[in-house]
Image (tube, rainbow over all chains, first blue to last red; front, side, top):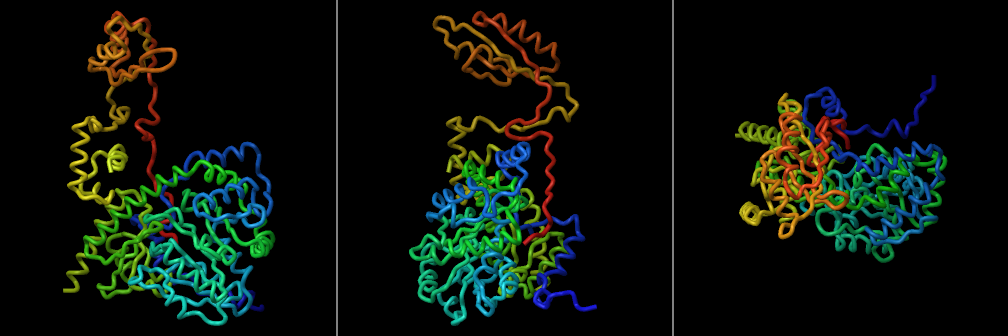
Length: 390
Length: 160
């Protein structure tokens, strides 16, 4: 029999921490600080709208780009919260989570050999999606000394004549880093000058704890160079609904829509109806959740620093990214021992790229009680390590 | 800062002062002072425990009584309310808009005890015109807390 598999996909390595995942999945009594999704239930008015749409028998496809009402609400939202204007008829499409939007955007914009700049540590899908789209991933290794922000120097260092796209994953999973307006302005300048395009993954934009989130698309001359990706998973605690969207100049969006049309058809109808209510009536829910995350963020950062772990102040998403370099272990070793000895699951920083080595991703999408128990165990573990080192 | 303190302790009055200060990003002293001040101003009126008495086996009945009154000369609603809320078994008294004047929440050991209160203490008050007593059969949610809720985390242990 011939090899049934594509060489391209076989060559893509599975997530680097497969072994760690396997151990975690066998330990059902572990306390986890390892999830990448909100602990809140989707607010009831949103769920209710989904239920109502089912009761009304709205169980058919929507148009490829999504329900008109939803697209209008998305544009209203982007104007209201992100200060950028999009045309609901030609510049927005509803996708199956932000993930689909990332994939489709890359496939619509890349020709073989085009280079894509991917700042890391970052979410795991950019590299494989780039490869699957025929592009060449070029990693920019972000550093703690810059608070894991993308600096102009780092960007220029990796720029080549083949560079076409810059991925902007901020607020960032796993580091919790954000890019403020001044940071973005410097990047935008280079993007314009070097004639690049940006795919800005702003799925965590509502979870910003320092000033207001700025989208790079709102800067002068940037809207026409940016594919803005957002969604409902993190802001409205709707991960399982699988709903996101992309907003982009119409020439880019038109081609993205083509891929979406053939591969997906349309995003889930029930979720789309629910999302209308999220955008229309959900601002207060978002605000309450943000306040709650922010409190836990302060609590977690404080507790980790008290036990002597270096931890830069993360101002976005719901992760803290402490350094464990002083223990002379890899992230994977640390996380594995912590799991085995104290039954606390956290994610090794290396799951998000080599530059995550020496760090852990700790999520605060948990109740305070849960955080307390887990932190007590981590403290015990850290104390033991310190004794061992002496 | 007041509103933020209140929002947290309204849901969790037992939280450590130290933890509360960290959550809010304020100093312990500042938070302690603010709480003390709010206690003094009776913004904070007490710290209570939400109990699901049904689970204890303790016999308890709660009644909600609608009361119509005629305010007497020199004696507005406040005075009548005062005569009612002095009774220990009265949990709450609210002045209402609409077709009746007061809602009284009453706790008793038995229905008979509640009935006795209504006929012997409440109805004889001069200003009270009529009462309508409703017994609470089951509490699903109280003080913003769902009584029967199971707190089970159904998320995967790890997700990226």
